[in-house]
Length: 373
Image (cartoon, rainbow, N blue to C red; front, side):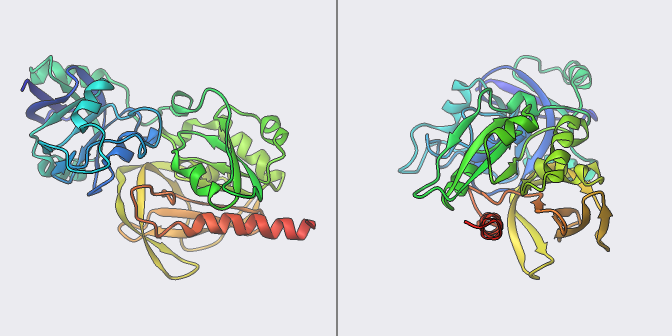
């Protein structure tokens, strides 16, 4: 097996073996704490331009299949694992993870002490890195890392959005139609909406208010996605127009950050982010704690100790992360809008937050009742 090298922007390096395709890649080094669901992680567009470090030591045990992908390709820039599976053991597997990485020309590294690497990122913060099986000189690779772009200030949604609109039909009777703005949407999201009788029209991130209104949609969904929300001025302008039109809005992850900006809140970059499927979130309305799936490096800067008065009326923080008190959701009192910072579709689990899709459907049902069916 060929040798490979990982170098962080602060100069720390890790030697290992080439995993996946040979080559040289750069991105933001982040760690994911999920014990399962690596295929969903790899194909999540929110990981665009990131090098993912898996904290679970054994990766690839269940191989890869054609059903579990969240998009049409692998989006991570690079992949870091400790002990890749020597053989696949799952009746659903159609090929190995190593073969999939090679086929999609994704460069990774194995044999790395991922515990030490994760501790380093947690203490120093997420940072740029490079993985190479071509250049094994730490100083040479470090110079290239320092020349690579930062995640702060990166406008990436246009790079991952759909090129053309498409529709996912409701399962059974279509009760509502929703326009989903695709900033990096995962395949499971319109499927979860379809299960609740919602037909979803997925639109490019560059769509205008006229594009949304032309659908005659009952509501708008704001998807997850990569990049710095502070760069998404056009998306925020559109969202403010939707709020002014009193069109119901439900946002997740990047969509939560956009909704926060539309209400007048700021956003900021987290030290090392939340990435995994075991993040505890407190729902302030019910008092329940949900175990949730996360993938975000930015958050909304909103006060958690009071209701805020905004241009669109009162807005409160609806959910909090129990690890660090990061804002995990917003709820408006005077316009039909709410959002969460995590992934309620959670294809790899857990499913504690699936009720949010029910809440969305109930909101549309109540509005239809008021308007008269």
